[in-house]
Length: 291
Image 1: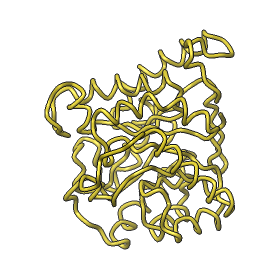
Image 2 (image 1 turned 135 degrees about the vertical axis):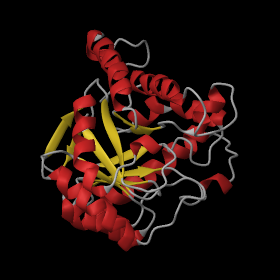
Image 3 (image 1 turned 45 degrees about the horizontal axis):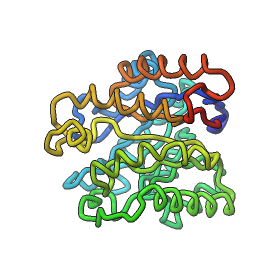
Image 4 (image 1 turned 30 degrees about the vertical axis):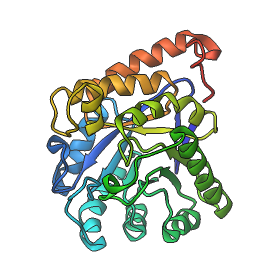
């Protein structure tokens, strides 16, 4: 699988790349990931040094009760950050569900639209088509910042997620968007057991033939998988994040999006080395995957 991001090509054939999260928000639950816009370039360089290959810039937290930003406020925070990082020849994605913000980010040099709402807004889909931009669509019931209120009952979560993502991707293909990535949406309106089932469903998403992004960094459901209460402030979330993303890489995810780049990148390098040692089929006894 070759990631096609404007002028950049990243080879993810039998390997997983790391996307570093750069928050220019004011209320992210992961406080160490937040920087002021004028500090964004230094933070991005540190993430690249730690092992990131793509920098994901966002200002609008998706957590329940997060501060709401107007498009103008969001642009004021993300556009200078994107421009400074892109100027250094770094692939930058923009984490937003607002088409106005996405346009400003593309103008500033972003090469990937990362839309947690699945590009269901016609304006976002039209923008991706107009600019031929790569776009990542995510599965989510409900709305950003209100996904916890959504019904979390699924007959077959992997079937629903795969069907939704492929339908959205085909629509975007037909409109003329660039490469369409898919993200199953870990932690968005899903129970802990269903998040675990979705992880096991990653090979089926890989089989769709599109780049698969896994974003589960420091999410509260990881606490539940460790036998604790749901919390984004629970102990050992960093270690749980490393484990979860190592498993995602093992199962064939092309990109993992994380706050703690250095630790996750080290784990992923080991997985990548083992996959490479397995030869053309990946050597994972059923998890040797295309792409």
